[in-house]
Length: 169
Image (cartoon, rainbow, N blue to C red; front, side):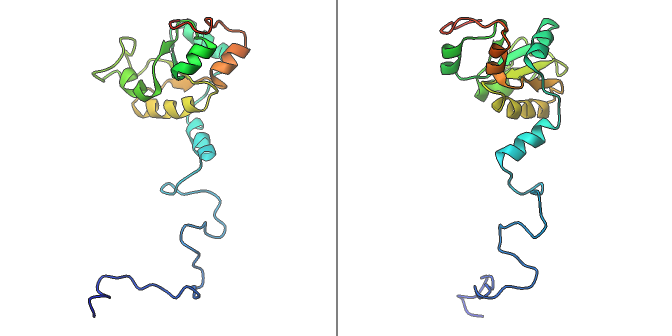
């Protein structure tokens, strides 16, 4: 074997395909869903994540808060300043969420007391919050959920919101 061939894979001629073999990266005939190790699109990822828990609507989120659940607002600052805040909700930046709510974490918030704590995550429209809930559930927060429609649904339901530009709820 020559040095140029040592360790090199044998590449087929581009005009020749073996029966039953498709192009790499293309779905196999009859395949409808990506397998566990194959990439998925965001819509499928959201569907998979949301299948693992029950989401809440605005009235259910308000009732959960009245019963002691943590409402956690993960919207970024510009949206909070523009649209206002939910009174009583904790504001936790998305990139800090897991560190702040892990009951075993050294950077946890005082309110993050138990893996059994009911947590309702709120983003702007209910998409990023679903992915955040998946992460919290992996940390053992098995009662974490999110608000369907996010802050915008809360406000549309006529639930309390602080005036835009307010920095604390």
